[in-house]
Image (tube, rainbow, N blue to C red; front, top):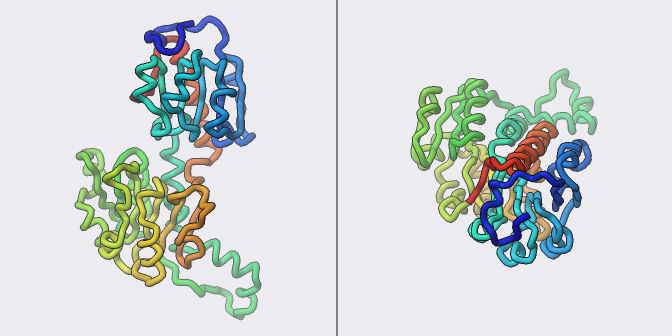
Length: 335
């Protein structure tokens, strides 16, 4: 096997069993899936979680490493002479110094599109809680409030239909498109903002608008863009001021898209109706967040991607990526 620093590893067909290390396997498989596929192609070591300081001792003999959130710097990779492959078990790969990896002949892959269905469905889990209040109403029933009301039908919270409302999609990638399709199935009008033309969206009757129009016209706004210098804090005092007092903001993308202080202020002052968030700037929020504890702010712990079927798809695709690398036809390479 070629050593770290030499090129050409992607053309190699492995005849011997590869040493494979999974650094944070808990996130992909907390125990309800099987690692047998990986065991069938190599000598597998799985760690539930790892810290940066664990990488060298745990991966020193590894030719292939899988990681979700454990970062790989140039310095780290230089200390792993056998490393030929890093499989990121996620779509985002900013945890890897991809330039250094390429210079060292280390192939880096990711898993695109695996979470489309799960995340799009989670958007509507948040939306439907605001419009139908299922969780709150169930809690009231268990607390005896329905029985005490004396009425056969108990509705202390305003309920709403989605039909006829406007859904604004910021970012019309795979997840944004699927979210738009579900919205349309509910009878909602869909407007969107995208960096590039989306003919398929227009064909489906979805209307491209500028962000100002999207913020001001939408009843529901769902964020589906990556976190970049341009998108960081895109939800701020200015954009919040454009929204309807009845607007609901949904974020299943990245916490850094939102200025949390500005959103908290808007919610406290009832300048928008609510926010459904699956992501925060700090995860988990060990130092707190101005959004925690606020009325009309639903927060789930970064679980939109974590349905069993979604994680099985992630595992299958991660395995396929590794097998393709081993037979000399790598796919989903990132640089």
